[in-house]
Length: 275
Image 1: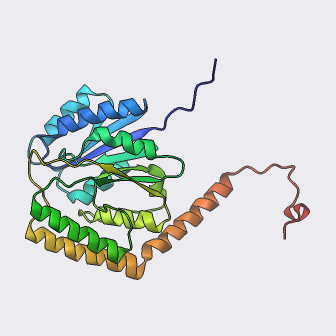
Image 2: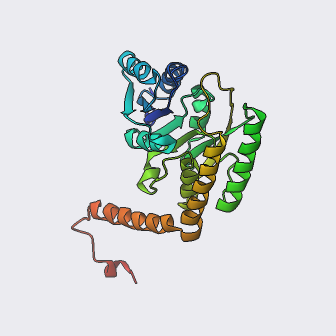
Image 3: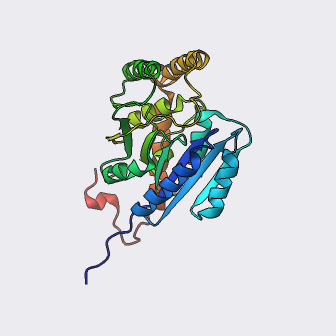
């Protein structure tokens, strides 16, 4: 009788949700089905970001129905980045997957990302096979992608595809600060600069069947442009995050060395031929 193989890693799935009452139930149920097929050790988290519709009520009912589901409520809207930060902090498993609660992605496709999360990968990033949005959103999205890829020096196919699987240990090294949608750009830039290994997987993108985008109006586009330039100055010009990452890495190494027991019988280093 062969020995059982190693247990699959634990998985945290979370959805940032704002006024997604028409889609959040199907997204959570689909996530429960998909996650349970990958690992017995999983959780599904809904981050209700101060929704004004019945998202909170539906999410709470889902948590009562499925023991693996829990809900984190923001009493006021903190923005997309604020919801992502809460999701990352709330995740307790070794791997974290997230996508939006508006059903423009299929949680079932997380299996494709899971298959690519090998020991040689730290983050698996989805990219849209074809964007299913109105033409003006497609055009603005392409301009945004090519612009930020150029000025931030990113090589990924889709900076803004919110369909990602990553190791929770990434957040031992990087710290996210943005509370707007620019957090996705901040995440990918900091992951890239920290030297984490990124794998890309094509995923389907679907028409929005419920609600409307909170981003695509001229006021928000202008605010996003200002936010992007501030982020560019902080990360590319000043590079403060790189210094912070070096300090956190040194602290982690010191902690690891301090926790490593030393055999009392070990000879001094000079006896081992150390210089």
